[in-house]
Length: 486
Image (tube, rainbow, N blue to C red):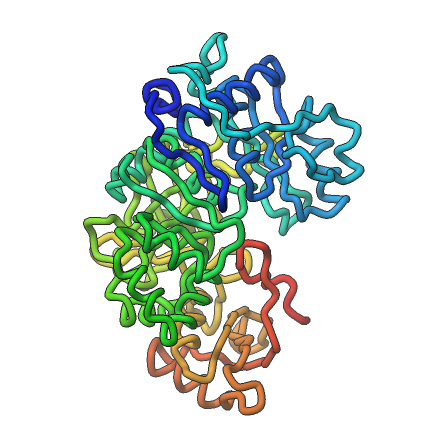
């Protein structure tokens, strides 16, 4: 496999590579800065990266990859217990951070390397560290899962997975070196780091990071040459809310080549509001830490709200029933767990052979734990997580996601989550957790049940509605259903 970032050694021009606020690096400058990092970490097995949304984080990760060293991105908001677990598990040889960053006590015992991203020019090809090239199966990243069912697990992501995922997305999105990506995502996970930073660099394009997401930054960047926007549903919800009073934002979005949402499902209501105001439709893709990207709506396909498109090139995808049999129906109703197989997958959970073995079927399919249906044309619609979002009620298998989308179409609902709870008659009853648009006048429980029954089917209506001031969410905007009041 060729270099992950050909432009670093093949392009001596002054083309921009990275911009964070007022600070930027050309490809030549990035090659120099990352090469200096690579020279200092070469020979280490793993290095930790204090992954703030900064130029230094991008330089640190690229430098480690150039040296063939696995990078362990650390969430700067991690608590002491989680951080201690990750450091004990991954045993990094050193920590890379921006000069001046204050590191927590857990990191102070490690050798620290301050990453310089000052923008000095480099000669042609000066950034590639000398040494044996890394192999396709060599670890590139160790990214820790959210740990919702126990201590976080470190997914070992090989260089092969990064290259194949980014190249498959290039095919699906017609992504080229001419594209300029704008986003404001954190850099300690797959979405913000692999797709949002390494993606443009593999294409030879550029990325403008907002530092902190706001609609003013989106307007500014899309109005001055950026062609693509990556975001999570919380960001697109804020965009949808702002559009009626912000014609400049609507114009900027209308001029974008591609608007992409991921990390959680984007409510259909927000899809439609953005499309109505801008004439542009947001497309969704589906992936996980362990699999990188599995599916996407294609740039040349139908941007259908509520779906994550079709499998990417090289990715095999199937739906499986609880007894292990394949769900063959493409009817938009038959629910099954998504299993995937392909070169985009991780190799193992670090130090966890038991968890690794449990995650795969004997014939190599990864059990995602996500449940979905497939439309007649093969589009995949995710309806939730197997553990928390597959509700068995009255003999039916019901995905929470489609009920949540239906609830969000009600004008009196600002946020919604759906869970199941034990019921002597039904097995499980459907419970809706609703944040009302007007807290002083929430929609009636019966009205919401009827609203869902008319849009979906009577057996999918919520039997109980509970009203909240806000839904618990993690850093990526995903609803944390296990944190809902019991």
